[in-house]
Amino acid sequence: MPKQEDKMEKVVNLCKRRGFIFPGSEIYGGLANTWDFGPLGTELKRNIKNEWWKRFVHQRKDMVGLDAAIIMNPKVWEASGHVAAFNDPLVECKKCHGRFRADHIIEEELGEKTEGKSLEEIDGIIKASEFKCPNCGAVELGEARQFNLLFKTFIGPTEGSKSTAYLRGETAQGIFVNYKNILDTMRPKMPFGIAQIGKAFRNEITPGNFIFRTLEFEQMEIEYFVKPNEWEDNFNIWLQAMKDWLESLGVSPDNYHVREHGAEELSHYSKKTVDIEYNYPFGGFKELWGLAYRTDFDLKNHMDKSGKDMRYFDQQAGEKYLPHVIEPTFGVERTVLTLLLEAYTEEEVKSAKGENEIRTVLKLDKKIAPFEVAVLPLSKKEDLSSVATKIFQDLIQDFRAEYDETQSIGKRYRRQDEIGTPFCVTVDFESLEDKAVTIRDRDTMKQERVSVEDLKNVLKKALN
Ligand code: GAP
Image 1 (cartoon, helix red, strand yellow):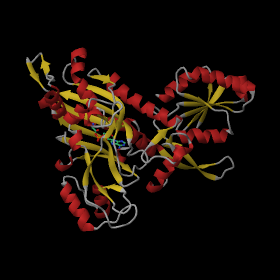
Image 2 (cartoon, protein in one colour):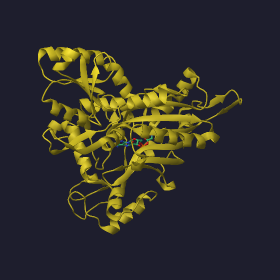
Image 3 (cartoon, protein in one colour):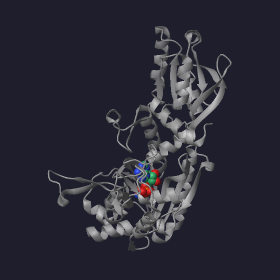
Image 4 (cartoon, protein in one colour):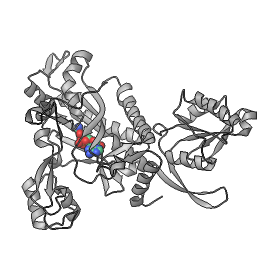
């Protein structure tokens, strides 16, 4: 296996080379902290989102889905506290005008956590420590000030405070503002949850570490509404559900842990938060997903500011109350990155000539691999490719399949290993006679001869 620090570079290279992820706007020199998902990355991401939706929406009777607008009335972001409190401390270099997260500079230079420190305290440390600018090296960092992460935009032809709108900083608010619509139309019984997958936007100024921190990213979020005195049990149940899903995707318990936020570190809406942190090759354990107890903070503020009654009427108890909220939140890009890192494997194998060589394999879980099976005719000759095409046409009715007839069979196996395809089906000249094909297993590289008639059943069994 490659060393941790090399692994990141290797995964980034593989992503580019094999069409998973490209730098954003690359032909114009890129744009910091933006990335585009290529054909295979798109499939991987879609499979992850589908798995999440299946597990947390379709397979539960206490959950419904939602797809709210990205641009909302700016009053939403005032009521939610994001306009006032969704801030990071920032410093600017007076010489090169580079801007940096003040807390990150302190953490990196002094190894000191800054959560809970006031802006004045952070500024005091910056001034006293005479840090060099991370960009130009000058000791001329200015005063630390708050920097709001919401992206601003303007609606209509004029720019100004009257037309200001925000790109949503979290998908959660779309859920809170529709909570009453869902109560009225779906008549859910407490406890119940609303799930949403969609883009969120943050004006991040720190280095992104590939797709770990980007300006726009997708969130898979659940707001789970509970009776106020039942929040703790539900919190623990959700934590277990998150861990179970992570492990079902193939992440080893050795590579992640759960960390609770200190009181000073909590977001403005949270009374208790735990992060599921993964051991990334850049700087160790960092947040992959989060689980927050948001109390009735959001519903209460929206009720106050909109004047709409958000209370739930509990028929059995004959009482009205504002439910409390447990929020499991999952970043899609961080999930993609984590699963790629976890799956990336290098193995020493013997080549056809008997020499030692390195085989790179993405041991992605079969549920989320871009393709489940690849159909590879041994040659491009018409009699073989017509049989292989027929097999492929049949397989795509039930499987995520790819057809590839370019390059040597060795190179094609290598490519399928690198993109994580669990099974390759090879159609050779014998297939024309015996109506059978060879199935090759990605992980064991074992090959098995299977009749074309049985192929679908064999694959179905192997993929489950
Ligand atoms: N609604 C709660 C919320 O937004 P958060 O911890 O700020 O909480 C949730 O974000 C998740 O979104 C994180 O756990 C992470 O997976 C992902 N995330 C946050 N900021 C991100 C960024 N700049 N780039 C990529 N993913 C990000």
